[in-house]
Length: 323
Ligand code: TXA
Ligand code: MG
Image (cartoon, rainbow, N blue to C red):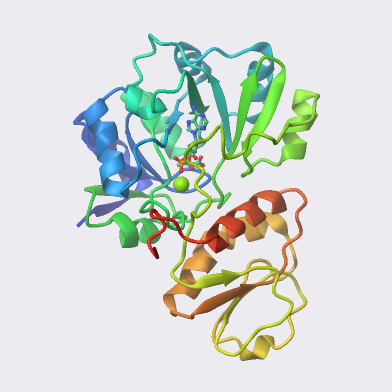
């Protein structure tokens, strides 16, 4: 069973386990991550093993400062501007990888690019203390809902790892936005905690979205899979269904729902992002055959929320647990 330590007591114990090549679950501002020394192949393999994650799926390397980022990847002037604007924070940039970076090839899954992110808070301090980048996917069993609390990490991975660092519920609630930078072109690979509009403003250009799912081999259509079937855009609730609500107005027949969670009673997308994974998990725990989801607007953070909901609703593949 994993030990759960509050973050103010966990810096040194976490550093010690990481230095010994063990994975540790840590809080970030987006979701909890299952972290390991990105330069140690066995340590990185331990992440895949604990998560049951398909190996072709590359990981994000987390850094503590710009200098560490520059040692690992080539940051163009445009990438530098985006880093200035959004790091530390929920932005991941896919950049040309420096072959001499020391990053283990399991992290990049053989690609000549690498996904880099500079997180806020405990993760950043831990990386600085360790003096090495950390590879960290979300701290959930592969294909399942991402964890936004230490308890959710424990429920999924508690019997597979030694330490979970508890930083309280994460503030953003959704994974980082992933963009790929190639010369002057910026492609949105995964919508997330920073909106496309915010990035476009700093980049001074619009994001292209064509390459989604091709560029990021890990972006399996079925992801974030609860046990219940997910019915999106629900304008009504059918008997026996659970309801994931949004905003002040209820779908027809909402009183028939066996259980209800509202992502944001006032209709605030930031609040909805924070609650998404926890509310999905709570509803799923009551074992309804179907979770009906009220429409969520697609603007701003709504793009990322709708992306995660669509993945939760997608037909399950072999990694999706229901197959
Ligand atoms: O907020 C987050 O990003 C969290 C926290 C823990 O930092 N991490 C996270 O990692 O969501 P993960 O592994 O669940 O998602 C990383 C995504 C994967 O879909 C992977 O395919 C993609 O990043 N990725 C990694 N390296 C890539 C690369 N070189 N090119 C394209 N996509 C890449
Ligand atoms: Mg994930």
